[in-house]
Length: 280
Length: 280
Image (tube, rainbow over all chains, first blue to last red; front, side):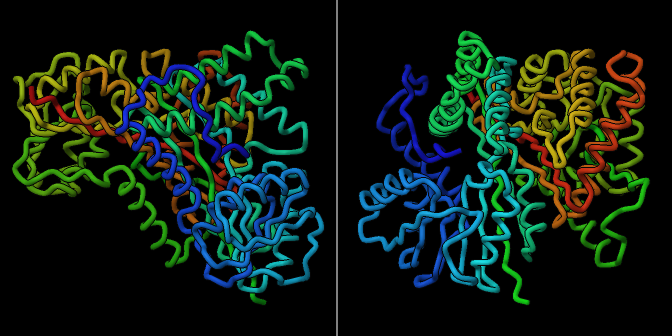
């Protein structure tokens, strides 16, 4: 879910209005989503931290903001993404110390035990071999170092009003991600994967986003700007693959957006796992 | 989900063992589930509380234990359930002051404004007209009185290893409940229902149960003893309705139980809503 912290403005009328009070509320709730994912993750100044799979830097800016003074290495397999991440961090967090590295989780360009902490957010979902990646990440962690893994699980998405069309577009997104070797349902596997990769003290907590009329900022930011936008992004692929028709697809997306209206609700659960590299 | 606080012992071997330490841990986690649902619900001594739909008293014992000195009225449409609830409370909470009343949520045997608080847990899911019931409950609340509603949502159930057979038995349970006019997916509707029924200050929070190897008590109590037991209870109905075969059904139940094993995970979300009866 790479768009999780990009907040697209709704392209239609927004049922909850745009008053000054409302704007402040939306801002607070945008921060609430970052807090939901990053709460509990703060690294000591001077510690060596690897962000594995930084993508376009959506989480990198929060990592360096919340852990001032860390020595962050941000790695991604895409040079284009690395360039965008670097520009974003230089713009939003001038002065942050980040080393940008191109590399692959199947074979990291670092010696054993090079890091005190590893952070990986919305990365395992894209990998053919998430277990192998976690084992390789354990290699570059010093004994006693920690790993933090955050993943979503599209099986946790449900909403009111319920809609078979909306459920279908989510199912198509899951199918397309699986076709590339990924797993949009990986959240439920975070604990078994960390344990199988040989980590100690594995602890996984669900972190649930629930939006209703009392939380209009979350409905706008998450239901529309994050989840629906992410699913909507695979429209052409889904149609080309013969999974759906343009009309059915658009109906499903419209029904997802419907859940962000005043009497709608939307539920999604992320899983945040932490674990320790064995000391023996 | 009437069985939510009944903890059936597993009928097969329990992967996490039965050591004394383990037994304490299980007990703590059983308490954790009660805490998950009842946290934040405490009524002042002397206040008039209606438990609407007390069933066999599964929640009644926690209500009177956690709010000593309340004047509780427990109502149910089933005289048989009322008898079991009374026996349970007299056994587990001797000395508690409870008035037992037979009655129907479509027309309550109480005058307007008779109560300071209403509590209803796993009730709306069984009603043909949950909105009408909430309106009638508002009638018997004094202005400024509070209502607390707790419901599950079977759409929130997912697990590892995933299994189409297990998903099918859950879907059949949802279908059978719908055939009686109920809604096993009502959790997502708690906020819209409370708002439509005319309450103020509606606030709904998801309360998520997540079980993995680090929480063996929850796997035993909730995955097996509550959720799987509840679904398993409709086996004969599902087969008689032609929804499934005995073999397919048993495979689905076995796969649900599989999620409680060491490398399995299970996720379920309850919704707890509170609201206030308007003062004007």
